[in-house]
Amino acid sequence: MPPHVDVVVVFRAASKRTPLSKEQTRKDAAKTQRQYTVLIDTLTRAGLKAVGRRGENQDQLLVLVACPSDLLVRLVHCERYSDFLYGLPMSKLPSAEADLDSAPLSSADRVRLVHAYITSTPQDGGLGIITGCKEWDRVQSVMALHNHEFNEQWIRLWTRRRIASVELEKVRDQFGDSIALYFFFLTAYTRALIFPSVLGVLYYFFGTPYSVVYSTLLFIWSVVFVEWWRLQERILSVRWHTRGSFRVEKRRADFVPGFPWWRKEARKMTSIPVILLFASVLSIILTGVFILEAFVTQLYNGPGYRIVAFTPTLLFSALVPQLLEMYKASARRYTDWENHAHQSSHAKSFSIKVFTLSAINAYLGLALSAFVYVPFERG
Image (cartoon, rainbow, N blue to C red; front, side, top):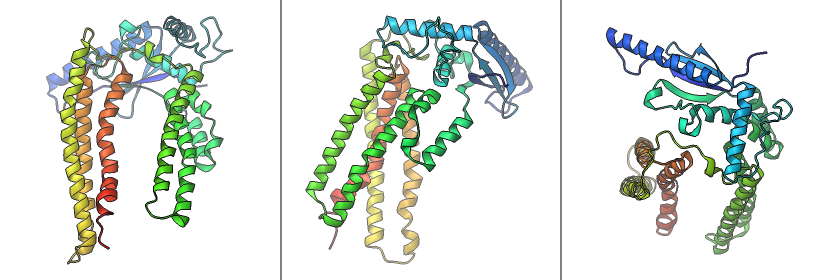
């Protein structure tokens, strides 16, 4: 039976800078060996079992990490103790006195505990092996291995049968709460789309174009679904014992303590002009592409019509993805600069910034078609 591996630390054995002189190569090799030795020592002294293996190329090492049962029991005890102190609901994790063989952890809980122990800061009781920090600049990632047998089984059920045949609780036990929440939403949203789908078919055959009643029914459906899903989120958080989990969330490694709240809010405000700038540029590009497309499809009948008809698509493909990538890079830098204490608030701030341009990219064309092209279309 192969040994159990909880997480894998991907270690880069060579510098990103190429080419290097002989002296630089020697210093780089010494630094790599020193950091790799410190990595193995840090893991083993903490009670973990670690062994290195060659990765997909000679410049990559994979450190396979396994957590013994006694250490896992201690991690479970620490989490339950922290949850109790902060008033969180009782977790489904077994108690410290329980036998993990008789009450085993799910794969997701086991990986989460070990991963958090490795990547948390020493102030939060972790080892501080954090991707991207100067002390561990050779550590590329700390990741979990996939269960390919489980993946093939549930994807086969998902794609070849029906959504209801997939037991989402098993998905949660394998991948964790965040992934399970996504698939719970996907299942609920797919089922909720039955109503607007049937309504659209009925109005297509029996209704009138631009029906106010149809628009009103869709508006009511969207509001009802959003409010219903908010209620479902609360129900799931209670069922999964995650309600209020932000109170015990680990701090980000890049967080600088002693940061006044007003300075953080001021930094958030400085991103607004950048968002407006990118939004204006994107709106101008999309409007120009829309006008060009209307001109080509409705007015132009000259030579090379079939080739010219692809011009709007080519301009969109050449300009919009590059602009969005530039904006995402800028939004990521601004979000890091805001100095968020927790990963959840960091991810929320970044998502809001990205959503702004994503919404413009997705719906500006529809808005122009609905409020400009259709009302003023000739004939």
